[in-house]
Amino acid sequence: MIEIRIDEDLGMIRAEGHAGYGRKGEDIVCAAVSAVMDLMARAAMHKKDARVETEEDGTMAVWGFGFRYSCALSAAKEELEAIAEKYPENVRVIELRVKSEE
Image 1 (tube, rainbow, N blue to C red):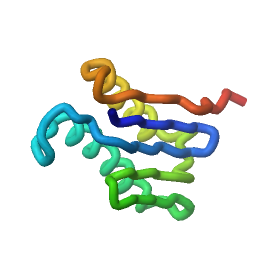
Image 2 (image 1 turned 60 degrees about the horizontal axis):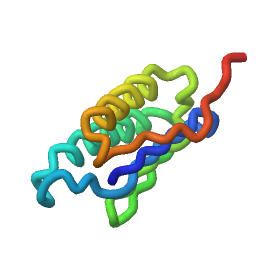
Image 3 (image 1 turned 30 degrees about the horizontal axis):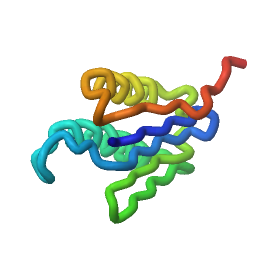
Image 4 (image 1 turned 30 degrees about the vertical axis):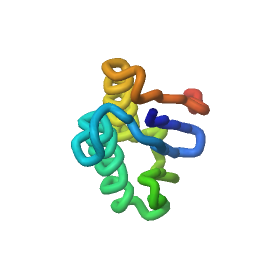
């Protein structure tokens, strides 16, 4: 199972785990989540205070992106939720904190 944690308060999105939908290198669910996370990492490269963390097991986190006002996080969140809805045994999206409107 891939767990995606989103914390709008910290401006963080993190994906970890393995989908287990298909064989390694042929897992379409893993590929879909990876594509969304890679897009977020590329977007973060253009932000001064953002950082991307990756681990050997494939875990990726993007921090400090200023997500509160970013349509990038909203789009990523919606896409990841759509993947999780279609593949509920393979992906779960967990919202840790949602920044309230001020």
